[in-house]
Amino acid sequence: MVNLNRVIIILVILFLGLFMPLVPSMAKTNNITAELKNAQSLLGKGQYDKAFVEYQHFAEKNNPLAQFTMGLFFHMGWGRPQNSVFACQWFEKAANGNIPAAAHFFGDCLLNGDGRPADPGKAAGWYKKAADLGHYMSLCTLADLYMTGTGVPKDPAKGLALCIQAARKRVIPAQTKTGLFLLNGDESIRDFAQAFQWLSTAARGNDPQAQYYTGIMLQDGLAGPPDLQAAKSWFEKAAASGYEKAYLSVGMLYFNGPKDAETGLLSETDLAKAYLWLSAAVRQTSDREGQKKAESLLEKVLNVMPETWKKDLDKKVDQHFLSFPSHQS
Image (cartoon, rainbow, N blue to C red; front, side, top):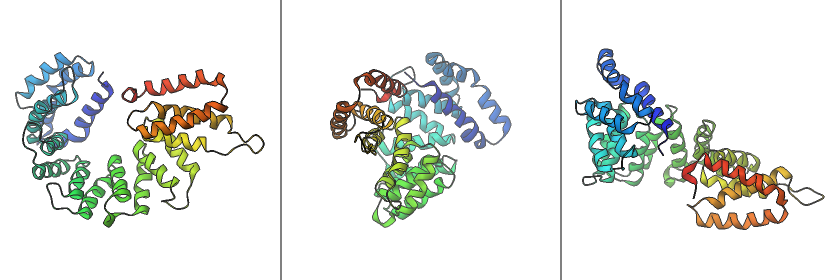
């Protein structure tokens, strides 16, 4: 099932942030966007076949935004099977019409070799063009190429500098990517203090991946003395947003939380939270070793948790996964 909110977000970004500055005049902008009004309405309502016909009509008349949306139809599988070759053909047309996101996606097409031989060198050029047009996250994708020497000379320092440019534009995913380069990248650029600065900034901007890695740095003492309470808070924020890796991390911290001096047991709150997040970790499918560890800890929780809690807590886990259907097994 297509997430219609995602469709709407893409269109809003295109109109307000990406497309509007790229045409020579406001009159031309108004003409290009006005003629797609009905198509946008149909797409927003999930009437994919009718919307497709509308967009195709204007795409064939060289409307670059319509061409980009045609690419999205095939890229996302809106009302039809996904087809990377057809998507890339439309992205190329839209990229030549200076649609920033299309330039980035066409770079992906060249990098992956979708319907053509892979050409990472040309991909690098399109990522640079996308960034010049305002799609700043493309700088971090270009940075990946410099980190590995794919299509460009290997130069981790140059790659880091490119991604920092995007991070300084307050692009939250770029802040996360910069932090990860500094945390896990080439030894020549590794810097834990700066990594924590960028990751914690992105974490405060509600990026679940940044929240998770901020928690890792706090837990492992990579940002000063270990702070398990702060780490648990960031892990839980990431987990609440459906970030799979955080389930086991936060569940373990609740499981290993402070015990009552007299009973030697966890508080009721910590015990319930341990059950919730370890249960979520058991359901994830991407990390079998993590599942095994979660299963072992969950068995220990069940040995001390009142049986009467289980039904209500399982319902909460179900509700969590209903919010993130792609995470369901």
